Image (cartoon, rainbow, N blue to C red):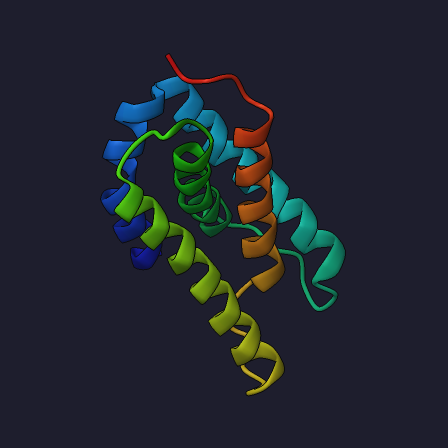
Length: 126
């Protein structure tokens, strides 16, 4: 939970300023819903619930907004995009190669995909 709060502290204010309060909330909620739906269907041991799926949507969403409409810092967008991919890779590696099932990998992947889809199908922020 502290990691989620820290990520939100890092990315939240800038992204919210770039896209506005409503789009920021919609991006976060779409990541939470999309991630938890994917987790429920693919995580056989237990369904997922949590806000980390929304955090992944914000990370990938920032990157996608930068790629689609050149919003925000290109360096930060690249770092957030690479960071999300790195965290996904580490999570899957921990689960499938080391046997440590401590992260909801499918939820994180679903949140990232939902964040990307939200930006892909949304209008340019004003």
